[in-house]
Image (cartoon, rainbow, N blue to C red; front, side):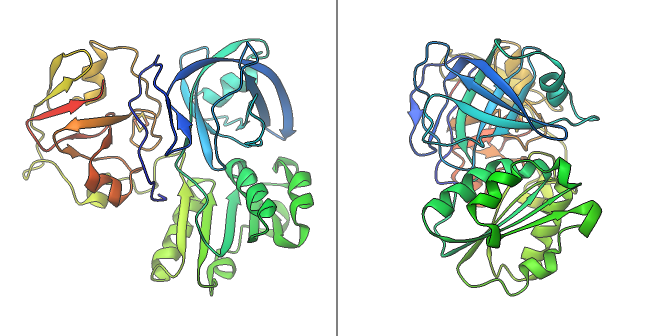
Amino acid sequence: MTDLLNPPPAPLAAADTPADPSTGGSEAVRELLVQNVSWQADGVLSLRVVDPSGAPLPPWSPGAHLDLVLPSGLVRQYSLCGRPEDRHGYTVAVLLVEDGRGGSREIHETALVGRTVSVRGPRNRFPLADAEHHLFIAGGIGITPILAMVREVSARGLDWRLAYGGRSRSSMAFTEELRGLGPDRIEFVPQDERGPLDLDALLTGVEPNTAVYCCGPEGLLTAVQQRHADSGAAFELHFERFGAPVTADSDADSGESGDADGAESPFEVELRRSGEVLTVPPGRSILDTIREVAPEVMSSCEEGFCGTCETRVLEGVPEHRDTLLSERERERGKTMMICVGRSKTPRLVLDL
Ligand code: FES
């Protein structure tokens, strides 16, 4: 995952904490009105949400995403694909995933226009890098954050290329706008006509000082990560993940495995704001334990990859088991994903 400069604060369901300028985001939860829903491509709808009073919304930068709390209570993350200069509305695009976990189906099959949804963010875990060249690789709905990023690098006059793969032309959203941004810089690869993206051709001999960005299906991310490793990290890789890694084993990835014999030990969690002290038993997550006293704590994937439950750690040393934080963020230990993380110390004090 791209290395973030600063972590976002705690995931309270209702908060009035100020925007965090370091992430270009806000942790306050707002009730926003779904102003319109538009068809973008086969299976892809875009939603524009606005403040019901017409007030401006917190700023964001390309690559940022929102947590949307749907009317059913499901929490999902969607990348912003509108324009940051439009301070009066956020736009996200949603692909219908037939066999998904229900969030996209709710958006596609429920008449949301005129209803309010709770929104947290924006937060940016996928910002543009300070590089000379920018190579974007998008698969399917992974184009949503990349659309905003491409607009930005194009407007800044930077050197960029985009390879955009999709199942078929009709399933690929935003192609017209992208063509207008730089027809010679973009390769559209509908799989039913041209096969999958040729990653070897794209990533072999990448120029020095190139930032490569990838967003798309898990298989594409894994393949790009593999080529990055095989190249000896010859290029800088940034990616956005909205699913569990194919070989999810965060303990192995992080080199952390809790107790030496593999068994989990109980530990205490102190919630600094309420003063409650809870015991997290073996086999139970911090999130589930906290929910007994604070059912409003937000979560989504509960597998450590989405970031919804990211919480500030005030004291103690977390044992990270997520697949989201960078090595530097793990070492700093300032935040953790409480849906999967545990503690290396007898007590953790959390900003909740
Ligand atoms: S709920 Fe997704 S990381 Fe914890």
